[in-house]
Image (cartoon, rainbow, N blue to C red; front, side, top):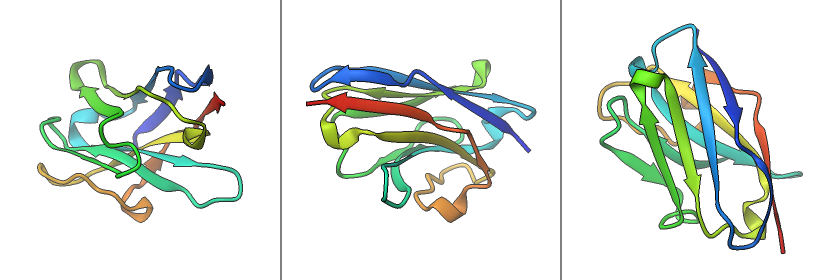
Amino acid sequence: QVQLVESGGGLVATGDSLRLSCAASGRTLSSYAMGWFRQAPGREREFVASINLPGDFTTYADSVKGRFTISRDNAKNTMYLQMNGLKPEDTAVYYCAADPATRYATPTRVDEYGSWGQGTQVTVSS
């Protein structure tokens, strides 16, 4: 089982940028498709973005397309989420997740992922 730790969250103003990181240990990240999800208070956990094993395919939720960029550095066993043009509705706890998927897969459902980090809070003030 891979262990995941998120970092990089914080309090920012509308329009600002943040970069989240997800560091993996215990297993090599190159064996997993990776994803970012978020959960706001009182709401279900929702898909944000995912990336396949080698990092050449990505999928985004419509709400973040064009503003967020997911990437990975398998040599560093780390995944990233660059968030630009942040809005108050982006406020949530952000989680990274790992799925031992096939090469081209970019999973989007919560139940496809078997390993999760503890989450990092992102708050965007209006």
